[in-house]
Length: 97
Length: 315
Image 1 (cartoon, each protein chain N blue to C red):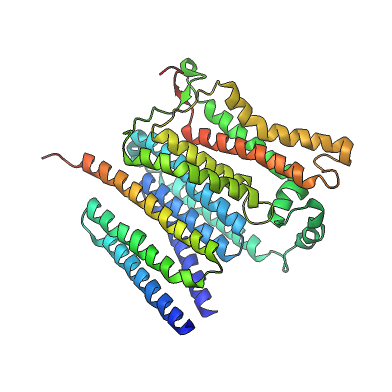
Image 2 (image 1 turned 180 degrees about the vertical axis):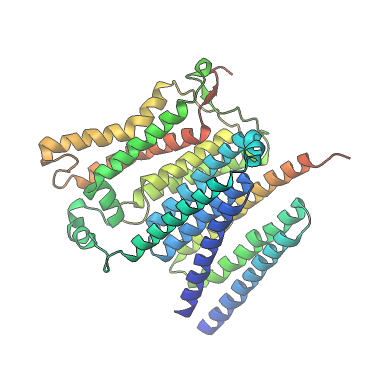
């Protein structure tokens, strides 16, 4: 059972780290603001979500698990709002054709 | 062991690189963003040193609030930035600056290397007497009982900083509302966040304030959270910044220091010294001071970010 849990944690946290890596590469390599934001949200939503999922079987109790999930939800909320605001400014400052 | 060394090593390297980048980069907006990252990384360093109280404060004040203040300063200075950058200092001036900086760095390094080992510590005395305060968190015990004078002066300094900001007010808008009027879309993302987040933020702030007695937390971190929620509501256009002439505002600003001073002077006849608490009353008195300080800190920090008044009360 504990072997199974270990495997679960290793697989999900590694997958989460992969999304963080992909998001960071995208942030550095993509050509404009909107695509860079698109890359960034992958790290926030999927990357952090998978890391949280992987850590859930490790926590001491249901309260700690709830805190972890709240952290993920709050980061998603903040990330979504900030990207909306940045995208709006980027669209406004774009030269109109 | 090796993994923790790797984590600490890369954290240190990142802190040094971000610090250098913040100094070297020419664009001041980029420098401020670098400074915010630097504050967050320092917060992680405090976590690694198991100083959670310092980490919370560094992330909230160093990474968050100071960066917001600096961003506002950068936006205001933008019109003069190009002309300032065009002025290049002469060679003697540069050499002098380099020599002064190098001398400072050498002196700092010498002092760090000359520190006594083991470092002088009052930790055993704190651990011995902490039971008399009724608190479980040694940091709170030091801040509010053993070295309460320092904390009192810090609270006063914060109000002075706000007075200095208000001193920049033009005469015609004295007593008016600080900052510009925020005109956000009432159905937009920001307004949505400003409706959703404050209830959660206020609960977390009260929790951080309450656990400060026994766990990392306290009035400063809680006050910063409250200030952030207030600013979010103002920036989303849900409420307006209050005119600085309001009586309740002035009372909220000085409440923390006044309560602190009143309890401090009451300690002279009741417990024999300024800021000493009568036996058995330490914890409730500290709680009252912390609650009043939290309100004052929240209002002061919020008004510091909003800046000096720029428009009259009825605009």
